[in-house]
Image: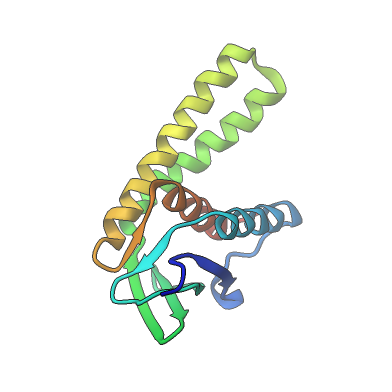
Length: 154
């Protein structure tokens, strides 16, 4: 039985928001972090490693998963994540602004809020993937980061 982990993550260029070089770099870092360390166990799969292709179709996240003797497509509504993602984007902007102009205590307070929203988003993602793909907490956090990076424009 192979490892239950991702070995490759690909983004569908047709469904990714246009981005600046900084946002594109953020996406590549998110992919690297996800691949570097993850626990990814699709329901019904004997073992991996797995390739994951992410796309967006009509307000749904598409996860195409392939592994040895395994191929599955999951469609998830992003509506349950939209509010958290919006708040996450806002607090990330506040964090970057705070790093430039705020005191260490203010930066820490904003960072705690950012981490809290990040945890909330990853918990929703794990809940939405229940029965489809089992993720550990850290993998869900990294996948949430990547999904946010995919939706980010600029």
